[in-house]
Image (cartoon, rainbow, N blue to C red; front, side):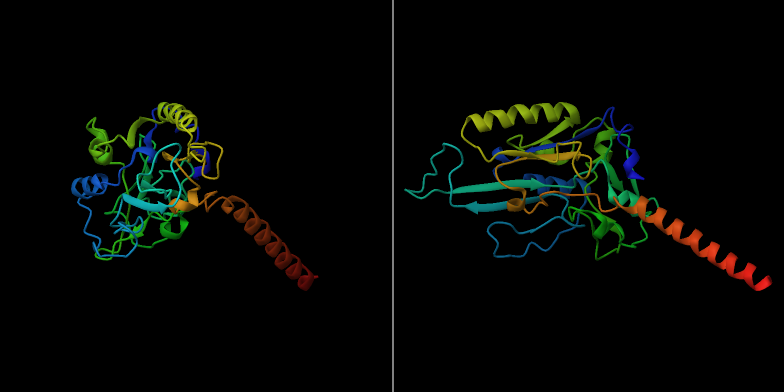
Length: 272
């Protein structure tokens, strides 16, 4: 079960720190991800939702850049549009590579596995298309590809990590909004950046997914946000969906034993 992985993930775990305060919405990460991982086109249709053409993560969208328009300033900055307070919130979302990963718990074939870097990867050639992982993910990251029927999501460029390279999205990001490295070092860096932003007047800034004591044990891809998580389409208090499985199985076992005891008692009374 994923609940026992904390100690194993303590050493050498890598991840993403996404500082949304410097994201410019260029979508270079989306393009780099698709090109390196051969992720299929996902429609590129006009959604009418600002500049967001991919809407969310899925089997054919492993990086999603959100655009949120708000009529309020960012800290002490001048919006540059007359007297109107205005700001864009932009953020590149990705699979969280959770410490307690429900997708690992429910996969019946071993298609999903934990790598030596602490990341979670789907082996598409092993996936049987059952789809159990799709509703298990509390972030709605995983999807099933229409053309093949198998699950797919971000691998944190597992092949590049093995060659000593950073993931394509982080390599391409022109503002270092997406930062890759040792997870503990990234968390320390994120804390320092949060203090800088709050000192600059961004009182709504916060870290999301960095806390090892949250409902998923902390994530391998965490974020510095400038507003509530819901504004970016993120769950405010994510919990691993398989949290109650152990107690459920214990209750099933107790019920089964009680049933067997009842059957045995009934049979004994018949023989008496």
